[in-house]
Amino acid sequence: MLGQEVTASTAAEQFALRRQSPLQRVQHVLHGHPAISPLLVLVAAAIVFSLINPRFASPNSLSLVVQQVAVIGALAVGQTLVILTAGIDLSVGAVTILAMMLSAKLAEGNGLPGVLAVLVGIAVGVVAGLINGGLVTRIGLPPFIVTLGTLSVFTAVGLLYSKGQSVQQVDLPAFVNWTGETFAVGRFRITVGVVLVAILYCAVGFALANTAWGRHVYAVGDDKEAARLAGIRVDRVLLSVYTLAGAIYGLTAWILIGRAGAASPNAIADANLESITAVVIGGTSLFGGRGAVLGTLLGALIVGAFRSGLSLAGVDDQYRVLAVGLLVLAAVAVDQWIRRVKA
Image 1 (cartoon, rainbow, N blue to C red):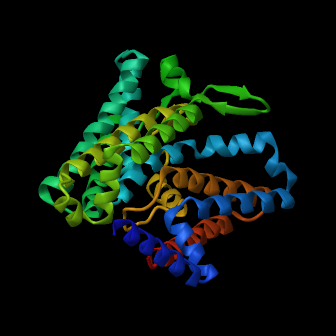
Image 2 (tube, rainbow, N blue to C red):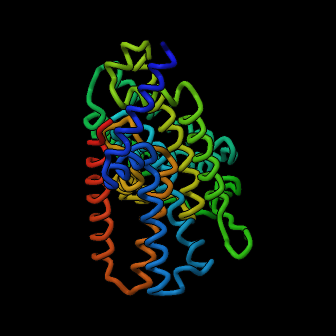
Image 3 (cartoon, helix red, strand yellow):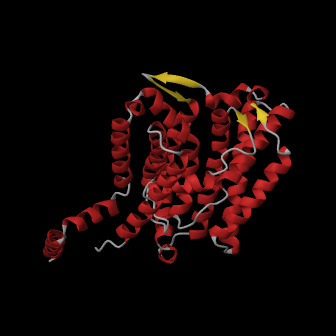
């Protein structure tokens, strides 16, 4: 009897699949594999921009694009984790700047060894993440309101501590500047920071796809009440997500110092919006429960490719901003369409 029921169910699914239109089949595929959309956009953009200006496909240009998106790409990993739980983090840039200035000032003015200075920066990120997560889980405030408030708090603390002054690369220990060192990979040149970002994506991607914690993150983002009824400790999952995101922002502070060649309180002014842009274009749903860090990486590369390609094409900077904005609107529209998929 059981075998007959399984056979009947399989036959019904196959019949339903045959009745779907080609567009509905595409909708189902994109629903199950959200990274496909940004991959197609990235490939199409690369082909078009290479035809417009062959310099776009040169190793030097591609290396520059990868180096430019490393910082936002790293921040977008933490943002992806938060958005997967149906939240949003507006304090991304403020946490990173605070961690960067604290570790740089300690290394410069107090002679703290480079390794300890970097660890202090990561620890600052962890504490900031715990604060955000604690306000969301213990007090029950919406993530948007919490991180909007801590955005101002962390920004003010960073400015007050640094007194608005930058710390130059020559005044920092070699280890703090290490992420900015470049090396050749064939005809391409990448930085140590780019390698760290790649490792970060692999680690977080593996955790989301292959651990119970990752499955719980998706479950909480999809439906918190259903996750709670299934025995998942929702508050603990949310707290872990915000804490890990904070640690990632602290690590990004180290990458940012190497990329910028200095620690400045005015760095990455648009980090919040740019990290959200990379996540959304990468196919992660703003409503939670669907997406992957692979898509986020592709989203960050798409933004970098559009800016570089349009620049090489001689397009005015305002139109480059317009193009990125249209990409975001298109990505959200596609996400809404995909979410209406019928089983």
